[in-house]
Length: 385
Image (tube, rainbow, N blue to C red; front, top):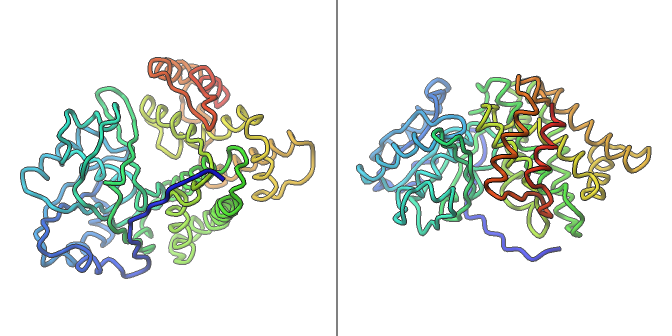
């Protein structure tokens, strides 16, 4: 097992009826900016619960944060924070709202130049406006980690940054807030969480025995609870298990002491930036082809995955690996998720060429062994057609 440092400063408040606890989690002398997306929280009762909890606080609002939060929009919120003297941010929504709010928190106190440098040039974040979250869409794990992914329309880029300064101080997870989600968003959340786990699990053996079993437990739970959640949209226990799986999938715990490979995400980000695929849609397209392309370097873990998660025991090593990848594709499709670029009317050759060109310009090397360069990424995309 590799050395690691694990720090998770986020307080989790989990369960039905927990939103009123906001009044005790944020000091009443703080000016709070509530951030949210398209306004669904005003239809499902979450907004009213938040405002009631903050009846003794000074509150401002900033809505309209997009799926795949856009830099240009977020910079408008940064101006609100600065001009109104906001001292605390509360993100209410899914991963996009949470990620966008993390960037707002960092950019509002960034003094070293253009805030885009935080994403494009590794600009160091010295401090950030403190923030908390009320999660309404399980998927990204952003409620319990220090990662954010931001898009910029002017340059068709989608980039990530990591900083402990933007880790939420607390996150409220009430499964009942997810009852009104449309099926495609639930489907996307299950796929996103599943891929988060595989990217920390399907690498090479590092004798992280506990981490492997934790990862497999999350995958098996998603395989079990994902369909249940879609079958009965108000099954509280299914919702609760799905929500907690999505949080555990990317809060850093299963990645402790083991190698990670986030190439699926990095390639997928380009599909979103260039062609507008939803985040989880891009992952479902890329992951199967990437696993097949990288099967020699990932051989031992792919066999373990097929046997322990999918129950595949018969055949040669290559046959077992292929069966595991195929069952993963079948699981995605059983949720209603397409797994081929052609299903999104995207040319695999065009996608391969555009991503290859961008990765070449950046000198991109991905994978747990940095074995996926521009040409390899192009090969993966051509096979995803």
